[in-house]
Length: 128
Image (cartoon, helix red, strand yellow):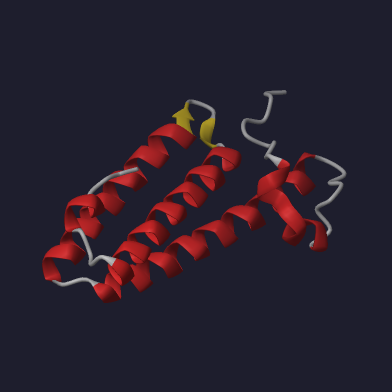
């Protein structure tokens, strides 16, 4: 049996939300996968919320820069956190969740800049 790739996640990402969902002590790899998936889905939702919030603050050039940066980040995340071989497609959910949380923080920082010092489109293209 092939060792599952990415079925472990740092406790800091699981946090109390996973514990409330019955994920404090998964009984097997499938339970663990279920819990990791829930963490990733929430991280992705948070990312999309932050992206939409930032996009509303930007002019057309800023939105284009943001989109370019986001597409570059998605490619980087996919390259880092997934692989495909003759046996299937693998996603390391720990990697995907951590990079998504990191990107969300990047977008939050850009939102904070927009609110305080003005939006800086040059920073929006960064894949982070």
